[in-house]
Length: 267
Image (cartoon, rainbow, N blue to C red; front, top):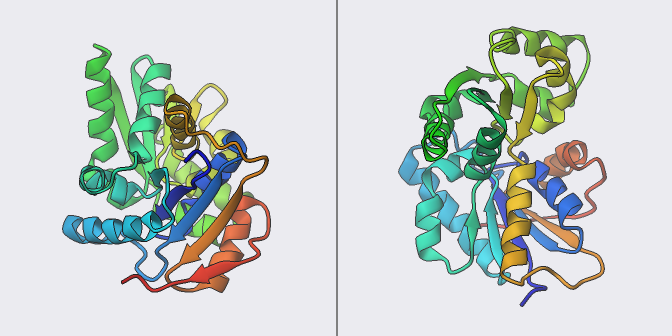
């Protein structure tokens, strides 16, 4: 059972930052990744639609007898986790709670969150931070900032340079000198860490929503005795459309070529 794969899904390519973190933190694990590229983005869909898509994605990954599922999509993490946990008998992790828990542990009073407009307007990170703060018996002040141009910057490969820096300054100057910890609340944003760091300053702690879910997965698998005994892991990629485009963008996320992407139709 320990050598069964980990399943990961996202609405597109952003969840590949979670895959990269898994390959670093759990290098012996097999990972099955599904990007629902035919129906991206999820952020503009209704909650019932997001739940339906998420269930279909999880059902596809369940065919591989996965031992754990990571929902590497903020929209699905916000609206579908409880339903997925009811329907499937493997552990289901989202990207929000592990990230928020780490941020609250490290912050004293002030946390910033940057994310897509849909994620910021949903209030899911803000609410989760406040709940975590109450559990710690602390009052946390939250500063939220929409960064709508960060995703296209990443997908076009503009990770550094004058344009990226100017856009980052436009968004992040509103948070400078006001926060102790900054959550990168989109799985695309870790690729912009260098420019974000330059703008926000060295004193602010950056927490990304890719690394913490991977660490949480490691902790669950270790606790349940499900860590792989394989000598070397591998990742298999599936998408619902545009496999060549996925390969092209995915190279930037993983910092290596993706040799094969299989295109499937969800039933």
